[in-house]
Image (tube, rainbow, N blue to C red):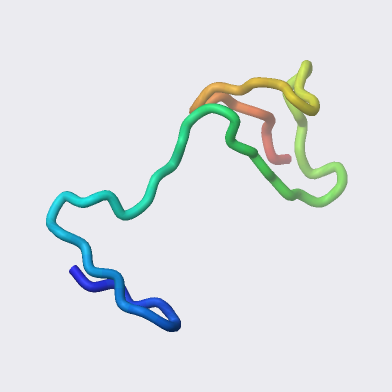
Length: 59
C-alpha cells in the first residue's frame, strides 16, 4: 500500500504497522453548551474513566 503525504510517499507491506492508539493516559475532551448536560457525580480533572462508562446525560 502506498500512502502519500504532502511531500513524500510511504510504502507499507501487508500487515505492517501504520498507526497506534495507546490505551491508558488518553485525554477525553467533550464540548457542550452551558447547562446542557447532567454530569455524573465524582468527575473532575484526573478522574480515571473506563471505556464505555457514562459521563453524563444530555438534556
